[in-house]
Image (spheres, rainbow, N blue to C red):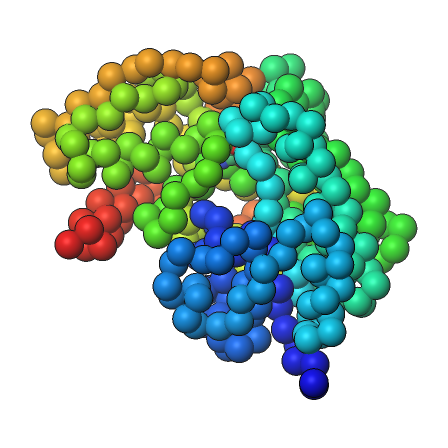
Amino acid sequence: MTRQKNAILVIGACGQLGSELTLELRKLYGNANVVAADIQYPKQAELRETGPFEIVDVLTPQHLADLAAKYKFDQIYHLAAILSATGEKNPKFAWRLNMDGLFNVLDFALEQKVEKVYWPSSIAVFGPNTPRQNTPQDTIMDPNTVYGISKQAGERWCEYYFLKYGLDVRSLRYPGLIGYKALPGGGTTDYAVDIYHQALAKGTYKCFLSENTRLPMMYMPDALKGTLDLMHAPLEQVKVRSSYNLAAMSFTPQEITASIQRHYPDFTITYEPDGRQQIADSWPQSINDSAARQDWGWQPSFTLDTMTDDMLLNLKRTNN
Ligand code: AKB
C-alpha cells in the first residue's frame, strides 16, 4: 500500500469546531488530503462523504501509529477535549483525556516529523484572580476547573515542545464559539448557541446563566479564519508559543436576547443559573488580543448583531 503524502489530520473532527474546520481545510487543501478522525463515526453526511475518515481514540497511541502506515501528515489539528462543564462531572477522566491525549499527539507529531501542530486553548485558562476586563496576554492564571487547568498545563507543554524539540505547535485561547452547523458539547458558553435554536423552535429560552453574565464570544467564521491565519503565518511571526488571546465580542444573556428580539419581538428568556454560573463568574468578561493583531494581523469581522442576523438566517434555512 502506498502512503498518502502531504496529508492533514484533524482529531476531534466531529466536534463543534472540528466539523467546520475539516470542511474548510478540505476546500483549501483538497478533499482527499484532509483526514477527519474521531472516536465515533460522523453524524454529518458532509463530513463522511467528502473525504477520508478514521476512528481514532487519542488515548490509544496505536491508533495514531496505525494511521502513519497509511498517511504522511504535514499538519495535525488536535481538537479532541472534554470541555468545562462536562469536565467537572468526571475531573480525573477529563484530565487524562485532555493531557494524555495532547502528549500522545505531540509525541506522534515529533516521531512523524509533522511540520505544524494546532492545539486549541481557551479563556478557561484564566481564573478568579485574573483581571476580568481587557484581560492581558500575560497575566495571573489561576483556573479552577479541570478543563482550565488542563488547558493551562497544555499551553506550557506546547511551548516546551517548541523550545526543547523545535516542534512548531500553534495555539489560540478561544472564547465561547457560536455556529449554526454543529452543537457544542458540554461547555459553559453553550447557552449562546442553544438560545438561537430555542428562539426558532419555541420562542422562549431558559438560560443556565444569570442575565448580566458577560463572557467573551466569537462567531464560527471568525474562529475558522483566526485558526487558519495563525497556521498560515510565517514562522517568525508566531511569537507567542503558549497560546494567543483572541477576541471578537462580549455580551450577556440579556444582550443576546435583545439582539434576537430585533427579529422576533415576542421572544422571551427566563433565568435559572446552575453550577455553570460559578465557572462563568471565574472567567474574563473581555480579552485583550493585541499580540495576535500585531504579530499576524488578527481582525474579527462579526459583531453580536451581525452574528445574530447570520445565525437566524442560516438556522431557518437549514430547518426548512
Ligand atoms: C467552554 O465553555 O467550556 C468552552 C470554552 C470557553 O473553552 N466553550
